Length: 423
Image (cartoon, rainbow, N blue to C red):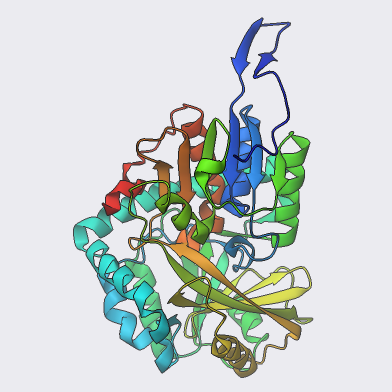
């Protein structure tokens, strides 16, 4: 049995003895996973008086939480499991220069996932998913504001929105029409002002046909600073973090356990329960380097014609893209990195000392996260499968899960996110 991490202690602590004179029991909790969901959940549990140990197998660089574009995408309230996305898929394939890749050698992973995604894309299921996702997204920015206040680091959250631009006039008209037809939750957009469009155009070597600016979205200033602030806050509140891989939930000794291990969550849940976990690694790629001419105050810029996003962090610019349906274990596809470099070259974006990264987004076929408790085992909870929205929904998920685990009312209907939806 795993016993490490919890100190020998009286299981009861006195809460405000000079005033109330009563005792409450401290829950011993293990959080499995050190991404944004896991660390935020650990902090939320600590703030509610739990004794928390985080077990993180991936370290500081590999988790998908730390390799994304830093965009808090509250505008993305429509699940990607939709008939419109299925219909548009052929022209978006990597083979034809698009962002979506289905490697032949990984067909055993993406074929069954694709069948389930088709099932989840029906009108009724899509509408239910959109309603559920919108409810989570509405909590995102308030939860982020609360988190950075608790961390004492308000500079981590940049509420400057983001730009979406197009190079071709036809693409601009089609893209604008698509956004006008979409539900964007609490975010709103407007046409870029002439000076804003000129500013973005001045950073690249190709003319832009037009663009829009989203208000109500946000980004983070630094993944590294965010992670360090979370780890520091967990330590200051008496929590512990250990970097070791968990192989079996049954080996963990705690009152409650929450699985927030991203793509690694599926195996842990499967070997412990009968529930179906159709999780796939939806792999994303980025390149990052020093970009002297890219303004620090520039919000994230989506080049929608190319399905890439460029975000400035400190003195470095990160250019991210691609959705590759595969397994987490397969090595990166160098062609994706080459394509990102090619996009940068065509746009005239120079990245000095560019480095490459690939990570696996944990994605379920209906593009909704898995939030809940394992049937038949009251100790085991789970929070994973946030696909492209792990950073966006991490702090909100943490508040929901901490409340659920400590028998508070989560104030949200979690049935839509329960794994039993997959049979």
